[in-house]
Amino acid sequence: MTYTLLLRLEGILQAWGNRSHFHTRDTLPRPTKSGVIGLLAAADGHDRDEQRGEDDDFLPLETLAELRFGVRADRPGSLIEDFHTAGGGTYPLSPRDLITDPDRAQRAAATTDMATGPVFTSEAGHSLHAWYGAPKGIAPHKETRTLVAANRKRSPITSTRTYIADAAFLAGVQSDDRSLLRHLAGRLDAPQRLIWLGRKDCPPSYDVNLGIHPGDLETALTTAAALPRARPHRCNAWIECAPHTPRAQPISDQPLSFSPHRRTHAERWERRLTVTWSQT
Image 1 (cartoon, one colour):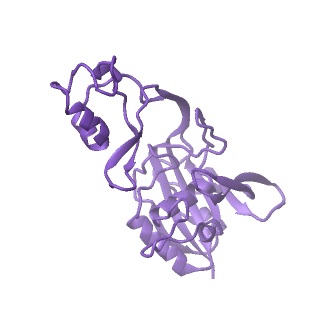
Image 2 (tube, rainbow, N blue to C red):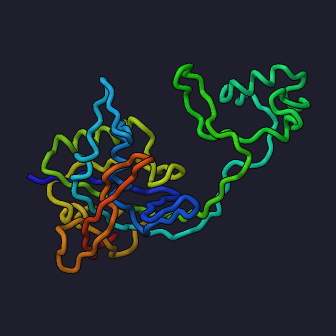
Image 3 (cartoon, rainbow, N blue to C red):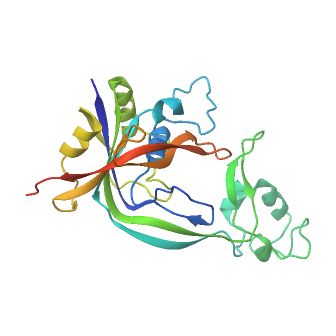
């Protein structure tokens, strides 16, 4: 028997990029399969480089990617654009820096005034307040396990980012393996990693898990109740289908790897249908 796990994807902002480059972050007007599988992988505790430890029990990406995917746009929202700036500027030394950058803390300890000291011994000619830049890439040091900043450049990083504002989508993943869907539903209720609506600054506003329903994606997405403030009477849905199905279109969002160094996607096919309902 076939089952479908439904997910409520609703938040102030969402972003489901399909052709994003670092300085230009686009979004499709609806969630992508890659983004939703990535959300499930994060909830499951998946390691993006597939480095599995003895105590890890996350599912392989191949298992998640085999799930059949569909999404319904109950409230499509509107596209907005943001000019985003990260880092840059000058800052005084703050207590946080003593934790995130031990090397700088040691140099600063030699100064008489940590907030406005004249120079670092290794940065002669630059006053402390002008030299310091916002730390980025904070992570534990491999040997000491102390938090350190990998990037201390002062140059700002700019990008143009598009978001979907005030949208609500009903997504579903289909499988004949009910135990697999129950595992994923449990992880959505108690995620092993933080989950986002496509981008790390887009948290969900409500619980994502809407339960497991008998039947395929078509049945689940056409019979499920409309989400609050849904578009009246009808909406569009996109459902994964076999290649070259009549009236279907290809889309390159089938995830093959989430590794930051070799992130890749393949082509899959989906068809659009119209869902209608009566609202009281």
